[in-house]
Image (cartoon, rainbow, N blue to C red; front, side):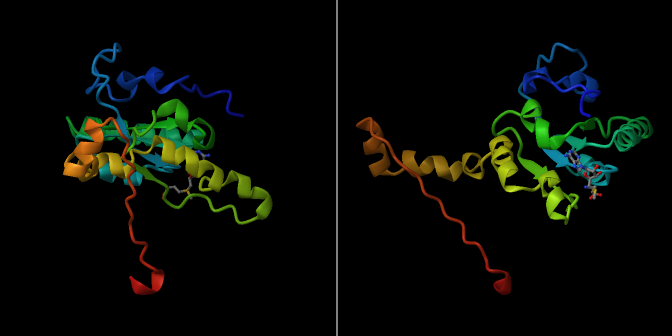
Length: 190
Ligand code: SAM
């Protein structure tokens, strides 16, 4: 049952000072501008997060893991790394949660720049497919919390604001519609 782990009722209720105490020393969360950007879904023992923590020292990241004992292990691992390496590993944390149910409780729309799904349990048997972390109905939810590539790309804004035609449309109060394409390279042409 999920009843014995707490879940924030909304992303604004997530306690950053609990997870990143050096970065958010008080519980008032004054610096609401800095938010988690990477999520490792089903992080297991946390190896990827530990590597990412030093590779992206300015980025807040979190692992989400269903198993209680594994989550506790990752917590301890992070705490001892923090003690052994003062000032490092302050940007990484873990929560015990069911990512298939609670992702929107943790992250706002377009908050995340990266989500990792490394070796998610495949659940080969058809009767267990509903337990798959990667499934069509969850893709919508993942798309919701991920920052759109287009929003992050400064060129995309220019498509409607920098061209003379685009400016004319804006002056006239019109609308522009963007279509940006990315070529999918067929697997035999990599
Ligand atoms: N990503 C890690 C790695 O590559 O070493 C762990 C891979 S392990 C095969 C899959 C992990 O996903 C397990 O630790 C499992 O407990 C976790 N998991 C499965 N379903 C989950 C869910 N709904 N929410 C959170 N974690 C889940």
